[in-house]
Image (cartoon, rainbow, N blue to C red; front, side, top):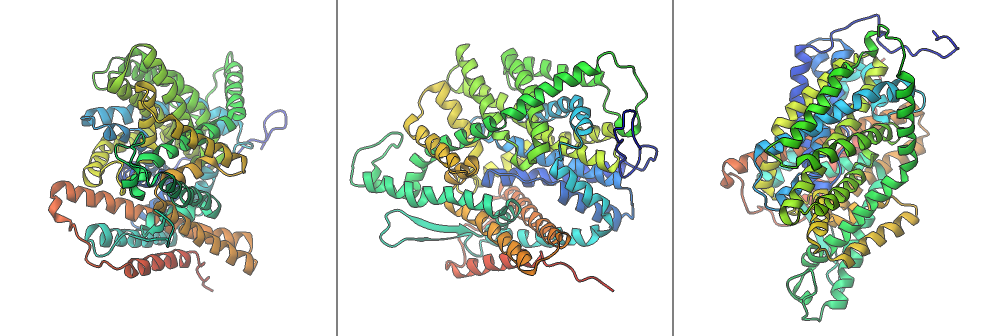
Length: 633
């Protein structure tokens, strides 16, 4: 089929002429439940490791397992709605934990209504601002923008008859991850980390945690990225900490920003007082470098947007097919303006007209960028951190120019950055979902409505989840380092109060630049530099399992389809590990909030052999999950 002029017309899996159950009560209820669960899981993961993962494929698999396996429903469009709503919760969780925990770190008395307001306004703006871009990015550039997660999710949906076995992999991973989490942080049966010092190497140590979620992250991102991340952790633990201890270890002088003599600080004290700022500088520089590298795509996106808008002027109004109907533009414009007006005059955040204008400008600019960038590199590689950092820096300078200082200016700056970050995360995610819908034949406006329902459901509970995690583990603690949020806090305080240890910040910036010149991903390296080594080391072990799988594929000379099946099976099991540990972590936090005494405080078994054996067992299960099923004859 072709259009006048010879251009082929794309025909989706379910053609426009055919209608199937889509935005049904069943899909909405299931989507809301999964949106809340995956939102909580991604929030925990983002606070733990500073990275989040896409939930579209596991959500599609779980949806098929429930809708097909339990309810005997076979509409691919219903499955698409469920995964769309689920990823709304996952995206909102990612956007929230990169910024909002900075307010907890400041000790601000945050009302739940304020947290709900921030995530909902950001999430809804992300959906509304993406709607006008759908036809240009998803339809007109179908051949040039692959949207990797969206395309992969469409393939999973189209091969839905295998959903039962795939869902079992997610369930088994969930069981393994949840069990380890309960035994370590619930019953305190054994330690959750393994660490040893190095003989005659002052203040140096190596170690790893045994948390399954981090193994899952490592498998999904692969050995190259995981290796670069652990390289940052090794530089901090085996280079910077020992160097600082060696050169200043005999001095009784108190060196800013520490408040006690360097010789009295152990490795953890050196990391907290010095490495934290070096890591913050490196992460900020890595985020901005990533943003700068995407400038050509940014300019192309803006140019294409304006060209597309000009072409649309004067075009005759025609009846659109089912698969090409968005939310009417009138309601989109009204929605955006209403939200910005509410932000300008709301009593919850008090960001004022300055903040509302900044959100409107940076929101639309970076939503446009995020929606296109994820089409090229995928959601996991989108420079959301860099765009949020750029927003925060400019907004902080503007607020300072208007006379805002101290905690007031910092809180306003962080609030604006949080709303923009939530919008970016949701916009990038809905772009992938709309690509999936375009391929399978979904109705765009129904997906956009489903996305808003998912945002609403997860947004109403996200504040409570963050509060639970803070009360149970403490934001900024070893259990929840909250690296991205800590960075936002450091940058905002430094600009508005002028009290940053700039030398340490610029050391981190310089490290990121050097790493970038070496051809590595400076942002990933910087995140590893900022996080404790035992976190990035665990991620590396997950990447190592993926490397073994790749070696087996190469050794056996497996065909592309067979190797893809291996990786997909491992990814589903890894997603289950992440979801199991993360959700049980939220449950444990809930139990602690009810009665702190319900969770033991002492570890029963002190030796490190048992956690080591458990760790090896989970690694083995992760590898075994990649073994293809034997075909029945």
